[in-house]
Structure formats: C-alpha cells, structure tokens
Length: 203
Image (cartoon, rainbow, N blue to C red):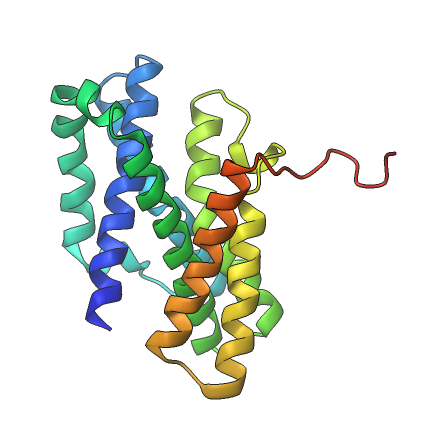
C-alpha cells in the first residue's frame, strides 16, 4: 500500500524532529542531535526487527528514511521557533505516526508466523520505544511511563487491528480503522485530561 509508505515516511520525519528538538533543548552537539533524531525516528522499529529476527532492519534497506532524518537537522536548527509554533500540527502527525507504526509492527510480526500476543506487543514496541530512548538520553522520565494515555492507545489500536484481520484479512479499511482508534483515544485523552492512575486499586 503505497499511501502507507508515505505516511510512514512522514511519521519518521516527525519523530526525528521531536528527537532533534529535544537535543537542541538539552544543548547537545551536532553529533548528539543526529543520534537523538535517529533513535527517536527508528528506535522502536529497529528494536522490533531485532527482537523478531527481521534483519537487516527496515530503515537500512531504504535510504529515504536516513535522508529524511538527516534533513531534520538543518530544518530544526534554522526554523526552530517556527516549528514550535506548529506544536498542534506536529501532535497530530505524531499521533498518526504512532498509529501507523503500531499497525506496521503487528503486521510485520504476524507475517513472520509469530503469535498474536507477540505481534500486538511488537506493535506497541514499534510505536513507543523511539520516544522512550529519546527521553532516557535526554534525562527525562519517558512519556509512556507517566500517567498520560499513550502506549494504551497503541495497545488498543493493535488489538482492534488483529480482531479485524481475523475476520476479513488484511485490507486498507482495517488499517485505517485501527489507526483511527489510536488517534481518537490519544486526542480524547489529551483533550479530556484522561490518565492512567499510579495504582488502579487505590481508593
């Protein structure tokens, strides 16, 4: 599905920008900014591919990913203030990105014959681990470890996708519906300030 490929590129680009901006805020040098942009953009997919034995990892087989990541460096350094003014736009692309990365992770894992539970887990890994690595290297508590609904949205999307393909196979409709589940949960959670309690059993 060619459209998914281009959405994947956009998601990679947006994730890389978030990594480079984090590097700039923490006064990393150019090498540090490059590494942070790279691991944010492809860290989740790389970890997934290594865990499921799909090597070489996806971005190493398509130079377009690396080119896009490297392009974020001059863009972020020269247009930093403008980019920060587009925070809502980038939030939407980021949400679209995690939705797509979740579905791609599930699909790739299932295609290797691994169990549905592992596929769902790898979908979440694909979506969130780039951000986790970014935050750890930036000396911040990762967003996914806080109360904000993030990984849960990806988990819900992954489960919905598996249920849909179990009934009618892989199709663009299934992909779109599953990504929409991630997007809707993520947007509603931010808008309504939903969060996951530290201790669900606490009164």
